[in-house]
Image (cartoon, rainbow, N blue to C red; front, side, top):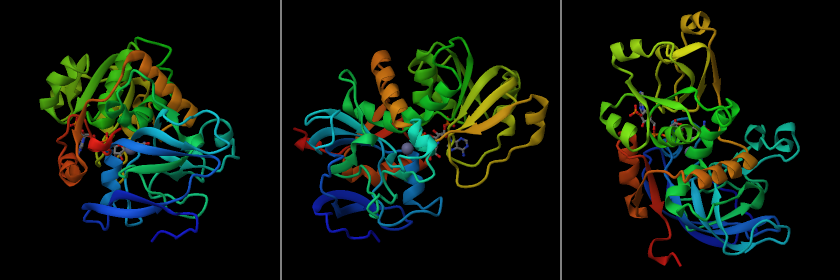
Length: 359
Ligand code: NAP
Ligand code: ZN
């Protein structure tokens, strides 16, 4: 249970899962008062990330119930603390996965707060004051301004919301793999879901040849026509997988369920890199032969730092990259989570949190 803190005086309506059934129901809780480093945000939209599903179901065994999920948040600032200089009331902003970090380690000092070993997340984390953090399935959020970014004016707030997690999670490894400055690479995206579809859009905007590797043949047409993918491999089709052997420089694996990395590694050229961003609850198979025969590397990546998150938002603004969203009302969250679990979403559910009371 959340620790009650004396300055947690603000009553906030939200939506929480109470146990591992994962069912979401209304939840009224308290947030802290707006501190000197904080901004208060009226939440407009919140994306439903597969990580929310992992949490509400306690897939990873770390959920503290009741959990208020949501880390793809866009909204408008209604209050700023006295130390906050870079935001003002009325600003259009976004909040992603991060709520706090130590601010002192080498990673915090080099804008890689996401790798601070004391990182605390927007929900199911423990804030500096000892309270449990609650996410964006709620009407209002108080966030330390160091973990808030501006949303470019040309991006709609609903379709921009998933950029705060899905977007930065695929942008960061693309940047790390020099995909922003060297076009013409052969890029593979495994799993065409929330993360995967933004990855396709970004990799295309950065000038690469993009191949989707998917379990869903039904996604091929829209992957090519709407998202701009150049190639599409059905991962269960041996012939297609064989034809794709040794063709890709970099692959991002966004798959949410246990699978073998062996067949995916075979798609990489010699010296290619597979970056795993999906987070299945069980270990994935990593056979040694495809690794050693192709001098291939496997690495991971977790969300992004705050400087990089602002850069990603600005890059999306410049290239007009937004997410393909299915907008839902808060009372449809359970249905949306069920459909997400069945891989039935094109490509991200976004909750219209403010609804009719937007202005
Ligand atoms: P999503 O929208 O559900 O997409 C996942 C995709 O994986 C599906 O659309 C599907 O694509 C594929 N897939 C699902 N089950 C599969 C299976 N059994 N075998 C093979 N492919 C399967 O999920 P998401 O929101 O993009 O998140 C994906 C994963 O990334 C989750 O595990 C999430 O927790 C994790 N994540 C990690 C970070 C990070 O910082 N590293 C950040 C956010 C999310 P096809 O239909 O094309 O096969
Ligand atoms: Zn997420």
